Structures are given as C-alpha cells and as structure tokens.
Length: 454
Image (cartoon, rainbow, N blue to C red; front, side, top):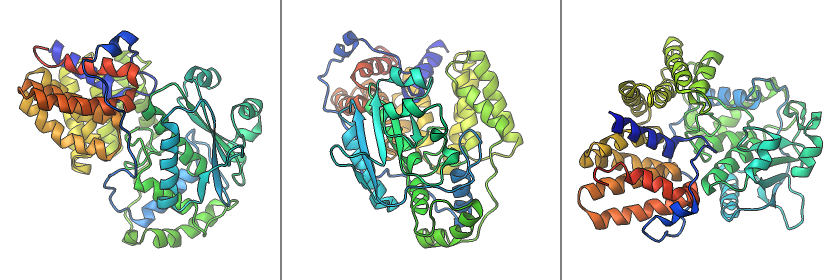
C-alpha cells in the first residue's frame, strides 16, 4: 500500500499541483535526463473540445451571472466592455513563448469571438497592457496571486500609483478604456499562457467565475486552461452590436434572447430548468479541500464536507465529480483505500457526463500511476490511450506530458524499449512547455521511479 500511495502522491504533484507549487529541480537534475532535450512543443489554434450545445435560455442566465457579479460576490450594476478597436501592448521582460501565445490568442479572439483586437504598434499605449514581472515582485504587492487584471491602468507603475484608489474598482466603471494584465515572467510557458488566456478574457468581458460551468475557463476548478468555444460564444455576445457599455442589467437581459438566437442558432431549443447555483458553504469546503497550505487532516475534513454538501444540495453534475476528486487528493496521505475509491467515483461521474474528456484524463493520471507501480503494464496502457487524446485536445501540456511519461514507462515495462524512447521524447518536448527545463528532469525521474525494477 505504501508504494501505491507514493505513486498516487507523485502523480498528483506532477499533474495537478496549483500554479506556483511545483517542486524545484536543480541544474544537476536537469543534466540527469539521459536523452538530449528535444525542441519545445507548444499548441496552436483552438482546442479540440466537444462542448455540448447549450439552450440559449441557459446561456443568457450564464451571461448575466458572469457579467454582473465579481468573483468576490459583489454585484455590478452596469454592463461594460471596450467600445471600438482594441489594442494590446506588452511591457516588461517578455518570455520567449509569450509573444507567439499572445498572437495565437488574438487571432482566436478575432476569428471565434468577432472582436476587433490587434497588437499595439511599437511605442503605442494599448487598450490592454500585458506586463510580465518576476513572480516575487507580483506577490509582494498582491500576495498569493498567480496573475491578475486591473481596470483603468496602463502598466505596472501606473498600477502602483493607483492601486489604493477607486480607479481600480471594477464596480465603478461605465465603460472600459484601459486595463492591465499582470503575469509572472519566471514560470513555465504553460503557466504564462494560462494566465494570459484567463486574464485577457476578463479584461475584455466576464469578471466572475462559476463552478457550475464545466466547459469554461471562467471556473475556479482550473480544468480548462485555454479559452473554449463556450468562452468564445460568451465573448461574442459581449461584443455584439446589440449591447453597449452603460446598459443596466434589465436592458442587457432584454437583449440577450435575440443576440443568442443570432449567434447560436443551434441553441434555439426548449429551455431547461436553471442550473442550480453553488452554495457558499460548498464552495468554501471545496476551496479548503484544495488549499495546499492546509494540513492533510484539515483538507480531508473539507473534502468530505464538500462531497456531503454536493449530494445534499443536488449538485449531481461536474461539481459532485470535482468534490470526489478533491476527496481523493486529500485522502492520499491519510487513507489510501478512500483515495482510490474517491478517484474511481469521480471518474465514473465525469465519464457519465463527458465521456473520455479532460476531467476523466486528470483522474487517469492517478489510476495509471497505480497500475504502473503494480506492474500492470497493459492495464496502464489501456487507461492512458483513452486519456491522451483528451489532454492533447484540451491543450493541457502538463497533463499530456505526464500521461506520455507514464505511457513510456508502461511501454518499457512491456519490453518495447525503442517505442518507449520515442514516446518519452515526445513527453519531454511537451514537458519543456508544461514545467520548464528546471523542473522537467524531476518530473521525468518521478515517473520513471514508478516502474517496477527502475
């Protein structure tokens, strides 16, 4: 049982650790990878995620909840967006992948959301300024924040001058003319890209996150790392000609049926009952279960409570699956049998809701690690081959690299050394993007250590 729990603990660390919690490798560990590192790989284009057609009535309710409330729960009285062409400027120490990832994002926003957005010219002040700074610099000002977006400021110095005044309060806006996105420059390319997608999207549109949205980056479960087709539909509605800054909630609500009928014709179907909102008690329990700063016992108590509350409140959707997933992670170091049972229950719910989607793939990491450490190469390969396409389609390099590393070890356990080497090199290419070269060797060594006889 100890090796089983150790295996699951490593995989939780490798694939599911919150931003900024990755273990740090030394220069020596990087040199320990026997193969020369292959070129870094990165994603382009839209993610390949099958998002079910949403009835337009539900989309309208989602839009209102996303656009007229902050994550803190504070209400917003006035609808705001940028009016006219939007430009994006970059300042600070721009990491090598930030430029290409930003260009890809701007292309998607133009093509999929119909937003008139482009890069600012050299020396031009942008409507949105993206500032890349060392993580420590950001967290000295906003402790605990991986990245954030602020209205009415243009860059870091402007933010420092205004951060204690009313200018940076989203609820006081009547239109959007300036905003700044602050993200870390010294983290992995994937973490930078994930911040870029979520914070630029919030600079443009919705300011809220809702756990009940299973196909969106506007969700604190961090399942989706890049903007999905659902998110692009919400942004397309935000910039539809039928809306404008300064509208009241009632005025926006009256316009939405016609807007969604226009941009989402497949959603012209009978409305369903509104999706139940998450209670504050459940949200707090889930956050406590996932908080890496909590002790094992505290996180386990929160996780058990999250499962109980989800069941009692009738949250039979992805929120119940997420509660079980949180329970599995929290139980790893305390109760191995409970952890495995929770992972299996979570996977069952996710598969019922979404087939072999990215959520199920996240749990596959845990189960495949268990199979590999137990010497069950064929069982691990069967699980992994169902999960790898979902990680690739969701453009989650961290998840994809972890799954491929596991696949390489299972393949080597089966005796196919040449194929294992090919798969491992593909994993390393994605791992460079997912974790950066400093941490990549440690991840690779952790996974290799799961194979019996390694």
